[in-house]
Amino acid sequence: MCGIVGYCGLRQASDILIDGLKRLEYRGYDSAGICVGNSGLLNIVKRKGKIKDLREVVPLEFKGLYGIGHTRWATHGEVNDTNAHPHSDAAGKVAICHNGIIENYESLRAILTKEGIVFRTETDSEVIAHLVSRSYKGDLFEAVREAIGLLKGTYGIVVVHADEPGRIVGARNGSPLVAGIGDDEMFLASDVTAMMAHTKQVLYLEDGEMIDIRPSGYTISDAHNREVEKKIESITWELEQIEKHGYAHYMQKEIHEQPQSVLRAIQGRFNREGATAKLGGLNLTPKELLNIERVKIIAAGTSYHAGMVGAYLLESLARIPASAELASEVRYRNPIVEKNTLYFAVSQSGETADTLYAMRELQRKGATVLGVCNVVGSTIARESDGGVYIHSGPEIAVASTKAFTSQISVFYLFTLLMARTRDLSIEGGLGFVCGLESIPEYIGKALAQKPKIIELAKKYAQAQDFLFLGRGINYPVALEGALKLKEISYIHAEGYSAAEIKHGPIALINEVTPSLFLIPDDHLREKVISNMKEIKARKGPVIAVCVEGDQEVMNIADDYIEVPKVHELFYPYVMVVPLQLFSYYCALELKRNVDQPRNLAKSVTVE
Ligand code: M6R
Image: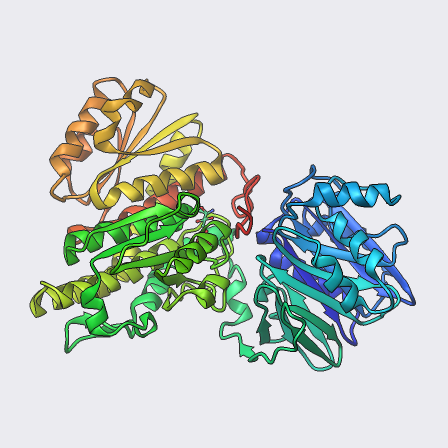
């Protein structure tokens, strides 16, 4: 959620920190600040607003070779300059940046207040600065270690002390922290994007670990204060991938990238001879695959919708009972882990707290949980029992788009694999492979509907409420369309099964509440057309997303968007693209901040 960054080396820290924060801004963007150490002093600047607002108020003489920075997504305390990080102790000797939530901060605050500390902010994080200060006896590492022993909750923290120039101490428990190794310089951050311009050699910290960095090197220790040897990993993607490349917004770029990102998700993952898929990272033998009797998928938001598509596919083609569930609900209902059930944790970021904690709970009960992640080296990717990377490339826009089509691609591949260990014939398998291989081209055709979608966005962007309706494998796509519209345009939107509206939501229908129907030429087409007529009979405006040339649907609907004809199991790909574009252009019409919608953050690392 929040982004943190730290630097120590031979260069001026403030520029590096602010550039790093700019790269992390997608994680949280309500306020930001930096602290730079110089000549025994810590100088702090912080501002409500975006990183560009912070940049404007950093004085030119803000010099120093080490420092820390933070971009905030508020949890405790309103959004203002004071509550922005870094926070310092009373003497201004210690400064900290924190990502996560300190659950026992009220009791710690009470103890510190009794000791005479006057709190300046409403945050949970400020206690950390005072605790470190209280424990400090000349060794920052020891002081931080003692302080975090008192914390309950989650944290990724970076801490500096005025009397120890060039030294930064970091600690991780539940919120990501990664260190970057440069030439006579070191970096710390909540994700690698903050340091990619400077180094690609990184170390991922695990929960319970602490790191002590100086320009000349680092030491890492575990929860028992034993030194840890860690493998240095190389970041494989390029800085160029996180540029906008002429697009107005990251979301627009990411929508248009989907022919390539889907190709990346599937290429090299077919075994033509066996008419099946090869997914090495699953760590499962064909025998183990055959023994799987049930698949359960846990995820949040868009990833949950992708999981629903996956469950539908597995049941319909591989004939394996499968279901998707919101990760946030799994953890707290004491889930029953049945034998021969395979779990998937789906997460673009690989850091979503709800999904991560649910995964850990399932693993504690003996479940095998595979990760479907985008971010390489993310916590879910590392802690899962195996898995598949979706290879979307960095997704920066808060509204997830290309991750969805890549996540479902992994489920198409896994379904093929499972179906071939069961009833699907070689011919059937080859047909499926061909279908999947042609998807990037069909996504390109769906993207070509852009001019029509821009027109529709102009016509409908003023609506107060919207319904998105689909059935079968396209029901989760309807949910996804509604989520996209509400999160970036702030138009109230709900997704339903088209069959379900007569059980209640139809009461909302009037002349100004549009319904968007997904109507592929599948086995449910006639039924969805009937549902559409029920809306028309009540004077509700209707937009239909239908197969090109479907005259019957086009005659009934007020407006339509045509998508290419594909096999009925592949419609989620071509149906979701117009919905992504529609929400994007509605948000533009309403002059919303598309990439950084209000109240949201890209990676939700708190429960
Ligand atoms: O990183 P994850 O895939 O685990 O994120 C899950 C959700 O937070 C995410 O999909 C969210 O719903 C997006 N803002 C949707 O566009």
